[in-house]
Length: 69
Image (cartoon, rainbow, N blue to C red; front, side, top):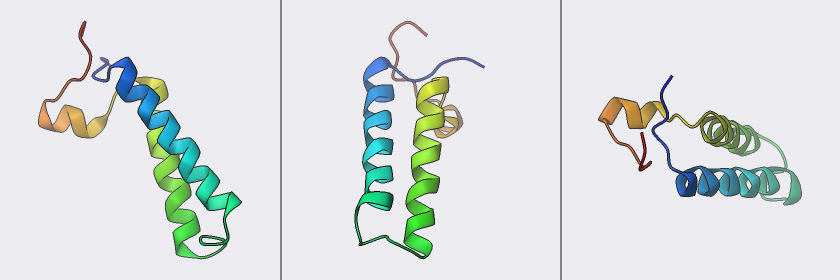
């Protein structure tokens, strides 16, 4: 699997995942229901793609945000 995400993109995704997890657990807006699970699912996808360094949608559209890949 080749990397198609740069360091800045990966950092932004990890930060977004952390914010989504906080929104799911730390606020009463998404305390229960579909919104809670949706926030957790999106956070998991963001975190996994950031840790692996490969975004499936970037591959689908032929995008790359890294300089040396």
